[in-house]
Image (cartoon, rainbow, N blue to C red; front, side, top):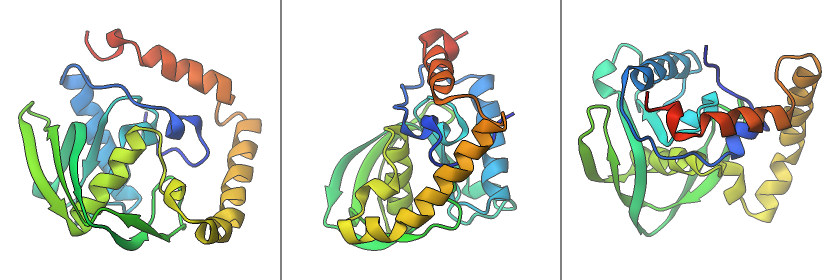
Length: 197
């Protein structure tokens, strides 16, 4: 059973590998991720945020579970072009309650596969473009706090220390394995046999 992992869980820094097969297991993960995302009132969720080291993420910019037609899945996403830049507020389901301004490309061009295996080539701006960049960063082990300037980094430090303290306490209580064991589990899942059966 999947759950949204909090910072500083090692999966959030783990670089995902490309999905090589779209199968029932992957579709099951996607459905479970949408359910988790809606429960947390989010608009996007990357696979490694739930401990899956695979390159895919989901979006529903309405955050409304009734609007299934707005659900989007992006497999092996790549940003091929960025235009200009703009700063706006972002949050992240792995950092509940933390919001800060982040500079992103104002408009992007991307390619990815959907859940049916069709290739998508589109442009995205506004919330769509920002969410796409945020989730694509996740798949490379980059977090929105990594983009902050020195002043913003200083202002979020107390909150990050809280997250770290809480996670280490959960590990000590046996809720999560040690960091080393987590990385070993991710490495084991990250073998080609993990997705193609």
